[in-house]
Image (cartoon, rainbow, N blue to C red; front, side, top):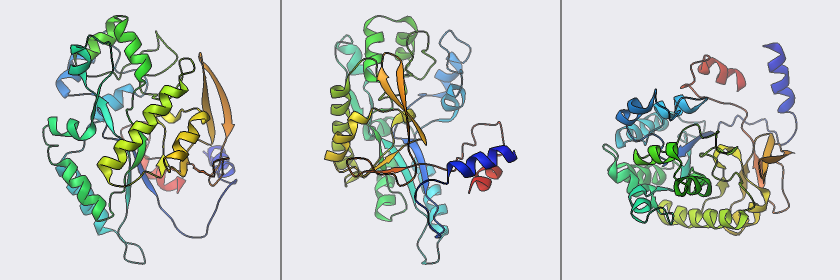
Length: 306
């Protein structure tokens, strides 16, 4: 325990610091679908399609779209807590802007990829029909300030390749409206890692980011300034595209694993406040709160990190 604390303290030494007491609450994956229903989960929990390996179990068990009731409860809590200037707590949902349009992809015989904006996805889910209205209300009250996580939380190229090649497990999951399972027998890339590289598809990924940021502006009402890559993986060659669209802050692990394609990676050291050649600032997270993981007391752990 003491050793871990010393390592954590040393990791936080480099970079920007302040005497101010600042709490930033970031929450990933808003707008993304993972497991469409409990019925689908129960159908696959002990099947040949492995939805329980590693973190898949807790994500497939708990990840879902926030209903209007969920959002109302969140906003009530945020509004009840104020700082010394009487400003309410602010929540930063890091958002996915679209999900695969399963029906359209299938009707075109997997020849082309299609997506639907997350707002269309919300309208199809029970209890979420008014969620987008609540998003706008939270934004207006400055309780809920979205930032950009990607167009999809999905590696489109890998997924479409395996669908076209009639991969049995991928197609079986597709028929049930999901992709979040252990696909490691086919690739080093997780389906969830949207910007990991199969080969050198940087131009394709740059267009996905541009399209996602245009969608962000249209649906959220302002330009995103912060990017958090799904699963933390992205190539630095995508930074100019992000800069062109006004993204000034980049999330990174302290040791960034940068994909080079063909299963190879390079490791880059980043720290809070580090600037890159495009004058973008790196932000790192020094506290984590993942209560769906039952391996420890997350309240105690997160308070200790703070």
